[in-house]
Image (tube, rainbow, N blue to C red; front, side, top):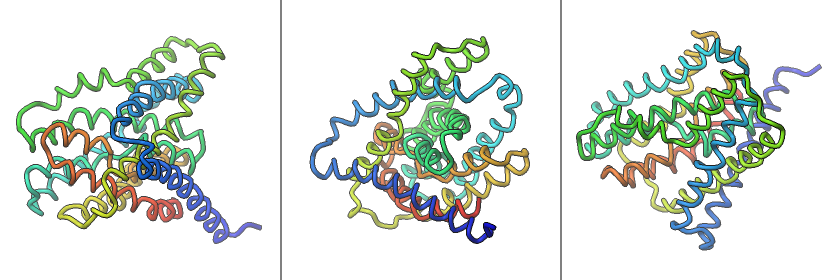
Amino acid sequence: MVTKDRIMLQTFFNSISAVLVVMIIMGMGYFMGHKGWMKAEHKPMMYKLIIWIAMPALCVNSIQTNFTRDMFRGAGAFMAVPILNIALLTIFAALLARIIKLPKKRTGVFVVMCCLSNSIFIGYPMCVELLGEQCVTYVMWYYIFNTIFFQTLGVWLIKKDAVGGGSPLDGLKIVLKNPPFIGIMAGIILLALDIRLPQFALSFTKYLGNMVSPLGLIYSGFIMYETGLGSLKPEKGLPLTMIMRFVVSPALCMLLCSVFGLSGLARDTFVVEVTMPTMTQVAVQASGLGADEQYAAKGATLTTLCMFAVIPILMMIL
């Protein structure tokens, strides 16, 4: 008979194994940067390959193979949990920023780092390693709202505190042109019309979608190399960012899942997703909008490193 302690121990070792896989692949990106095999000018090509080609294919394939029309009819909880989790974290992080009196150019960056996670480049492969391919459906649900919040409210917060002006609605144009979002909408339309892609099209999108995990992790590893581990040091607000990402966010998500009756794989996927590091795109947007790019890059790197210690503990709790 398998004891509870033995099951917990097995879960712990399984999560350690999953974390090691992710760490090793990210380490390849770091190593490629160190050796000069990958350089800053290669990032736009990799980003476009992942976001413009692999991710839309993954979205369409996932919806075609994992979704049914009945799932969309009862999708209220799948929408409510990520929306409320992100919204409540945003409010709380904004209050914290005022309390600790962050410099203006760091305030928006801090709030976005606290409330939004790296749902695809790291979140997707981590969820697949921990929970299996069947979790992709719920990863897509979280990704939709994480992306919408980032491109609207998130970009507006970073811009407002850096240069002022603008509106969250300005980001809707970006969301509507976002290739993965278009892929999700295409998949939903096909599902609503009860159109199933032929087998060759499903195989094609599956092969392309399979690139997301390794390329996303290599890309993230290279970002860590660019930031430089030697330059990392505690700065005002960064310890709070890690508390928000790894304590407050998963605790709030588990509470919301309980309130809305989500359990099993759906709950576990959402909890893992909200416990991921901050988005690497925050540093990109901070640079373009005149906010503190280095602060954002350090936040992304520190939360990524801490994630490797947090995830095994989180899986024991789940």
